[in-house]
Amino acid sequence: MDSFYSEEELKEIGLKSYGVKVKISRNAKIYSPESISIGDNVRIDDFCILSGNIKLGSNIHISAYVALYGAGGIIMEDFTGISARSTVYSAMDDFSGDFLIGPVHNSSVTNVQYREVVIEKFSQVGAHCVLFPGVRLEEGCVVGAMSLVNKSIPKWSMYVGQPAKFLKSRNNKLLDLLF
Image (cartoon, rainbow, N blue to C red):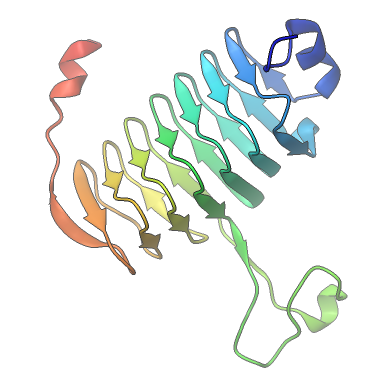
């Protein structure tokens, strides 16, 4: 038996849509598959969690132990990737002390903020990173390992740290490989 779902098994998952050459590990966990669409040539490795409104473009790799919590929506455009043990949050509790925290409480006593996360084409997220709700990684940006991204990052730049700060500009020569 292959470690990735077969074509027939992919159909049974109930994804909103998916393209060709989609490889999803049998050890990945998918919640609300009817809200998840996947393009062509996408690989999702072991122990990933995908939950909520998620739209994956084409030519994407999601490494092992990545969690995509898409209650507020997550979009990964073409030619993007997320390295191992990173987490993307599109919803966040209010930790001010004015509200209760967690999904076990009625929404009348919580204050969850939902904001879409967008990872634009040619962007990459390093290992052990955390992306907060509302973040946009503009085209071609890279987030270094173990970074906390709490604000949007401009195109063709590299950011690292907690919180992530500008490191340097990134070359966009890779575009010549495709066009």
